Length: 128
Image 1 (cartoon, helix red, strand yellow):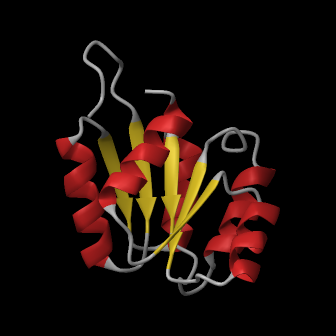
Image 2 (image 1 turned 90 degrees about the vertical axis):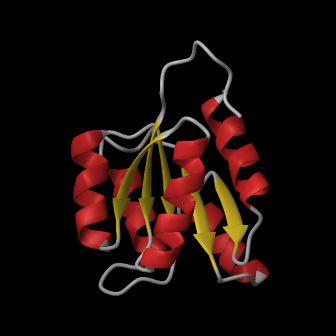
């Protein structure tokens, strides 16, 4: 749980699976975070640049733009290069994790995942 008295942090969740986004959104809100949800990678990219969230949770396997390419695009933009990115994906091989690090992800969590682990990583990255 977040500490009282802190400013509400805004988290953008980008995943093409609405079940995942709804579940993550519910737990984030229950822990005091503001959420923005996108089930479309292109819209998620635009949202990240326009809304400047405090953190992005990003799936890898999405149509049109995969998470690795999106991470590269986010790191290339002045407005979003500073935003911590957590890749939340079913891609669990070591080479996948290495690619995530290479493209600029701050953390890499594989599905299925424990929400407590995700919340811990969020807290560490946001320093809450």
